[in-house]
Length: 184
Image 1: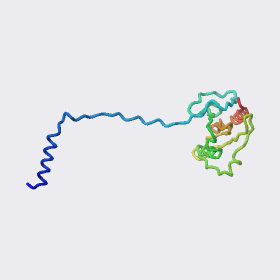
Image 2: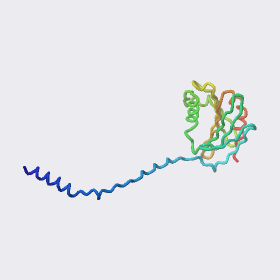
Image 3: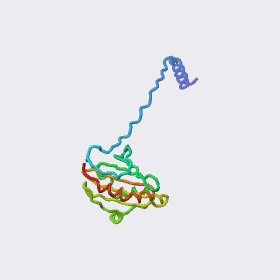
Image 4: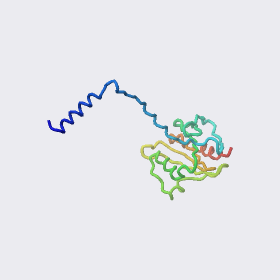
């Protein structure tokens, strides 16, 4: 037998002799749970704004990002009013208006078009911008009234959405709700 083969056989024999099955230990380690993603909830404490909801509107629980919610009755079922407050500029007016337009299947507006597609309303809390859009392709029977404004480093959103007939009937009351917004 040649020299390298002898060493190979010797190494294998030593390996077999050194191995004992009762020395083998197996451990089970549980996986770590993934860390929950951090979310930033709107600050409920400031600023303290108040508004007067129209009679007949049903206050519902907020939850999630909603500070308040209302069911708005109408000729074609109930529409939904959500009130949300976010810190800072919340993306700006154009980005939010275009997000709402996207929800209705409408194309985005360019910066110069926003003024012509929105209106301004004075409130005791300050001026706000509001929009009125009817749904586009795939959303023909949907309508949205929404308002947004910034006060004390926060952006407030009032959004009424639902069937065209219900939202159209609720438009005067929605505008009255907006006019009632005041610092509490």
